[in-house]
Image (cartoon, rainbow, N blue to C red; front, side, top):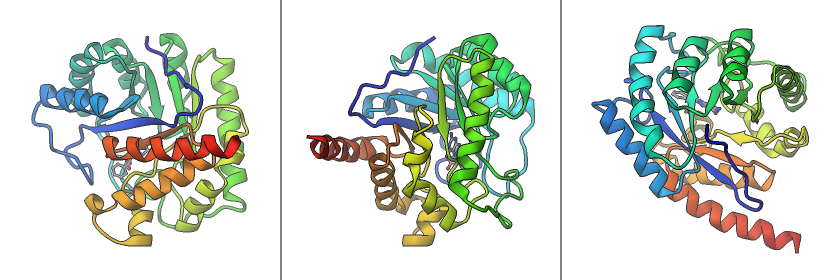
Length: 272
Ligand code: 7PM
């Protein structure tokens, strides 16, 4: 089991490897598990510190994917890729059976967009020794963007993550990472508040992952299709890192790595 290390002064890069046929920005590109694995190797070379593999479209408005289908997409890729990497792999799933199979195939961290609300997901992490990325989502992917409502979005997301982290710790899960779940049951204003006040979530004492890459809120602010949202993605990553994000989850690894090298250096200079 590889553990994600957090060298001080560096914002880590989590590279996205989508193996969904319908993923909005880079899905359906990989014709075979071997091709997807080759992309994963390329992401490590570009500077990724973690590779997140997902086979279930969590697109707002999307329908769920069957266990068989999801397993056929992700397991062969993890089996081909994980042994060839120095860095850890996370599996983006909310199905406990997929999580268990993925860890057996070589995944190191379970990334659950439903925030480990299912006790079987906690058990999958605890029993396997895998780490956990706990993400906050209001509602479910099919309907979550209809009319998200919060009193204080940051306080509510923080309370949810604190409660889930305590449950995972009680179960013996070793490595816990928190994620506010940008775009998952959130309006533009909610997303902006969560990034602007990310330090409040960081104050819980766990590493924080921020997933903003190519998301809809960037289009809302600056326009463009998914492939035209890199500038906005970098702006959001830099802002998030300034507020304490430990990891940014991105499609464009080489570009974001360079941006973080610059913003990390400036952050270090502020402290002196
Ligand atoms: C379509 C719409 C396809 C949205 C994919 C997505 C996150 C995640 C995703 C995140 C964590 C995407 C999302 N987003 N896991 N999985 N945090 N931990 O934009 O923000 O990649 S799927």
